Length: 312
Ligand SMILES: NC(=O)c1ccc[n+]([C@@H]2O[C@H](COP(=O)([O-])OP(=O)(O)OC[C@H]3O[C@@H](n4cnc5c(N)ncnc54)[C@H](OP(=O)(O)O)[C@@H]3O)[C@@H](O)[C@H]2O)c1
Image (cartoon, rainbow, N blue to C red; front, side, top):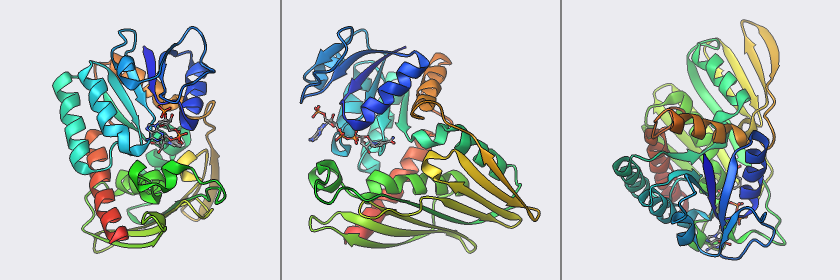
């Protein structure tokens, strides 16, 4: 399976390292600002359209700024390519719906690149939780916050025109975790946010309530380093996923016993989602059971609402 990249920024280079680790081929890279360091054996385009028209490309990895995901993904799907699109899949539930309908019409694979979900540590922790080892889950507390360089902030993190803000950038991880466990649509939401001068969330606290006794308390930030663990509490114990968004270690507290578990990721960790894409496509699937179209739609609806409430 041959990969083509739409965009060649920071995460693309990490993904490239992951693909090299598992021996997947990158055959083309499109970057409007140019990528002088591309290997000679890889086609290099200064526009995204040429990438979509490259017959050697089987799957496009969309890794551009959030505002461009929907348009590029739809162009790739209509050109007959499969797509792995960086998170968030789009900046509205309406766009996500359209992307899915284009994938369905073209019978092409489409997945939102929430890489955490394919990490061995994350998967093992979820398997234990879903086996009932800590009982019925009643509470989730999860954070993902980092402090961008205040002297030289990345434009894509602060500029509303590029669909910036903490919720789309990192809030999606704790929201995805909560939905992975609670599955249902939340019945109510409470949001508090610290907004930047450009009116995007620098920091945000989101509480999701599912019914009378299931809650998720989630925070995200692009201006504060937080402890990015997830603490999942059930009727029979707790699961503490250390750095849950890149989980390689978790602590299980069940039946009054505490145990620590380690599941290292390979390479940069991004190779795990790439392997899943290849396996699913070769099996004739158009979506992933772990990051299904329903899951991405649900995330987009929650983020739409949370962002509206935060920026109100
Ligand atoms: N999975 C993860 O762990 C992870 C980590 C970080 C980021 N991400 C996601 O990956 C995506 C890219 O993040 P990044 O940190 O790699 O960003 P980045 O380094 O800033 O690169 C962004 C790319 O977007 C392209 N682009 C398209 N339109 C643009 C515009 N109007 N302004 C600026 N750049 C534009 C640029 O390519 P051109 O040369 O063509 O303009 C550039 O290659 C985002 O969706 C982000 O949420 C995921």
